[in-house]
Image (cartoon, rainbow, N blue to C red):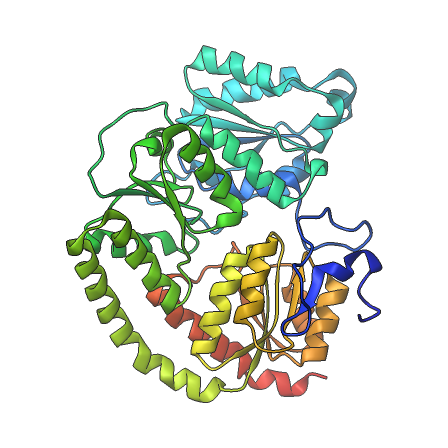
Length: 442
């Protein structure tokens, strides 16, 4: 194994075709490795942030609120209260004497001013240290203001971003089942799409054309009342399994709502997402409409993609994203436009995810769990990648090395999901990979 891989991480890196056995994953980040993962608090924020008619208040120093302000490019079709970042701005005084009075005052003032449908209160590292009773304050304010006030116990030091997802799901689950309204027969909840650049609206259009009712979107363009009534949907369709699988399992256990995992990235996975819903409802009518949609969209898309494939054939891509399910979709999407994936990694993948990636990848593809900048830089150089697909923390790595970068982060402004998103993806890969600027880099 290369000497730039820390000894403690040897089993979190593999090469397809040569390394047998399951990869080790779900481990705490190695101290000193500057992991690409974020903290528990950040994980909870990225899941809950898109609920547009809720109040989100960070109980902690102002830096935590600044760090996660507008952290997702999550668009709303109505209210935009979620885009305002509120904080109790804890200082040395509160660290010594406690921050509960400040939290109570802040919550009551904000609820009176903005009249939200619910409030989420995020605990940060300092709150975990000084021991403020956030649950007590939330219960008190909930009774006084007659709205749900939900504590999100997410001190950043107690794990990784993935642990924050679980905390967020548990906070959401306290809302589910508190409203009981009738829904149509063919009704689903979409879990784990966050409406980045309006992607959710593209997906909802496909399902509506099939005749499927969208009951709740959790959490992209999310609404509190829809989440409260989510238990009445016939099916949970989970896009981002890393962030939302826990909520789907909780709803299955308590409300017997079945769930399935899908991906909306790339032609193949997008089509399967429509077909699988039709199969679940066992409806010939839904299946016929799904086939019509796929036939129409693919027929329009494939001739245009062929132009990109002819020009991109043989290019090499490095992929490092949050969820492994997204990485799997990206391998397929890149292959469709002639690009070979030579590095695949994720922050939150599990052993089974990496087995799927191994089988899908070409020989000697580097597969990595929870990587760090030193590893990623050396992997990219070794495999001579032409483009790096990742998030905000990977962009500097690509540009320092002197290769193109495709933003697949949750702050992006370009829709990459659905058939329309596949076209946008091909355009972006072509534009960045073929840019003449790279001939001037070392």
